[in-house]
Length: 276
Image (cartoon, rainbow, N blue to C red; front, top):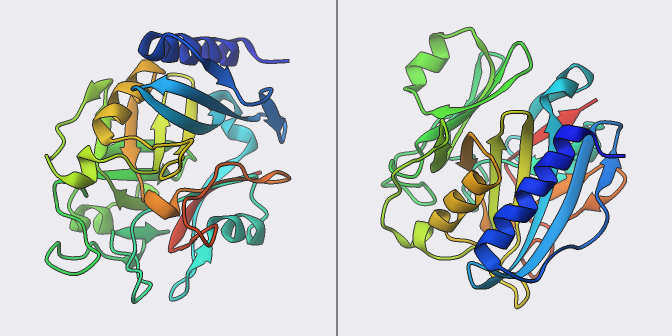
């Protein structure tokens, strides 16, 4: 049985999608429960933003943070699939993380774990790096096991601060304090692609995987994403590595979205984990 606040979330999601599309919103299956408190589901609509969309969600209520903890898993210098990160750490769920160099395999965005710097943000002049206007957000896992989405700070700040368990830089930042952020006018933003989002609502943490590059799933541009995430109640939201990297894995179910690479799930540099 759904908890009341999660029923409200589903209702808000339903009404927001109907508000955009008017017709043909339907969940692809019943809302499912995983590990007592994690909830996940997938929605399909053929008219959201006048397009076909397949969107997978994982919802963790903030009231259940005492049952789980958050981690970032990485495997320098090698890549691993998001599902492998999840399975090897006995996680309840996993979501692909930030950007990486597909040639040298290194992450291209700042990553700090337990006060150790794993990767630094690469100069935007170098291959596989993103412009500063894109890499403007960070996901923080605090030592109190909370998740924060915030405007990026200088690397020197994170290096000297002892408040963070994990810092992962990515972007663009999409929402902050329920306000849309300014987005650069570049194809990375304005074209539709598969997308990975992490967002916070008043009551929940959401992992969101938007399928794309398929006839039945067109993906979103980031302005559409801002409107969508705001409509479903997100207070803060950040864009993570998308495209063929977009992957949402659930223990016992496997990958619940449809990664766009023809070869299947793409190996990535790091992944967010929810561990029980």
